[in-house]
Length: 245
Ligand SMILES: Nc1ncnc2c1ncn2[C@@H]1O[C@H](COP(=O)(O)OP(=O)(O)OP(=O)(O)O)[C@@H](O)[C@H]1O
Ligand SMILES: [Mg+2]
Image (cartoon, rainbow, N blue to C red; front, side, top):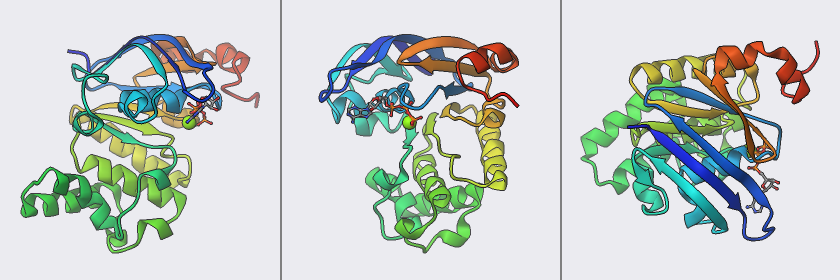
């Protein structure tokens, strides 16, 4: 079974009524890393919100077509149920962080699932260790840097151990060492069989992906092997996805 199936998805936010996603179809197999790239405003975050069910459940608007994650149609399941399948890390971590400490933030979702206390403790230690943020465990997430906030939001999502991760520009505010660390973590997670969709502008990170989806003005312009898409300089330049050096 495919991890993600998006079939003829079109979407307009309620306020503007303008179509943001236009008849998009693609599939992601379990264990694949797929990078979603495209210029600002092309609809990448909107697509991520559709994968987590935030659209249409919380944001409304008009959605046609089908989105399913691990076989669950996002229209038919609640966001909390979908969160067990898809861990969505938002582009703006402030919308996701609300606990007084980093460890509380990571414990929040497993506590809601009523997991045993020892299991929660071991998950907290595990994700803090994987992400290299053990030293931050007693800090207030609101007082961290942008890059650190993204790591905490990622930890909170990883603690639920979803099979699919959707990461919306989580590396944008990290330094080169932080980016390399996350790239290595993503490769490890793939080895463990996780499916990852990552929105990213940095072509070096994109190069760890198996496949690349290119979105332009709400249309899926290209869906190809990462090697092939990244080697097509003429295509990248023409669509302003790379600068002339
Ligand atoms: N809540 C909202 N209500 C109405 N329109 C929205 C909303 N969120 C986004 N949009 C519009 O949808 C379009 C796509 O936005 P989106 O955030 O998906 O782009 P993006 O590709 O993620 O851009 P970026 O690279 O800057 O993050 C934009 O024109 C934006 O103004
Ligand atoms: Mg975005």
